[in-house]
Amino acid sequence: QVQLVESGGGSVQAGESLRLSCAASGSIFNINRMGWYRQAPGKQRDLVATISSGGSTNYADSVKGRFTISRDSAENTVDLQMNSLKPEDTGVYYCQAITRRSYWGQGTQVTVSS
Image 1 (spheres, rainbow, N blue to C red):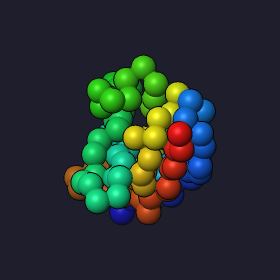
Image 2: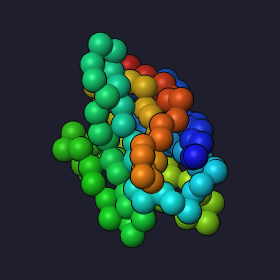
Image 3: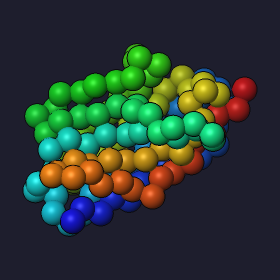
């Protein structure tokens, strides 16, 4: 079992920055990939960024050049630095960890106003 706790959400103006953090605990040695997803009201949950155990990253086209995902294996955390935020970045951001199955955090709200 893996437990994930997100933090760092909030309300900002367009153009500002936020940093999200996800702390993993439990069977962390089995974690292969971690990532961030977001869900806007009335929409499906979509990929934002992922990072593998080897450090390979993948980003949604909409966030490339603005968001950066990083992973600290010693601290068992994965962070998402979000710069130049836009109103369309608004949503609940969920941390995901993959072992033989997928684990999700409880989500943290990000609201970007114009």
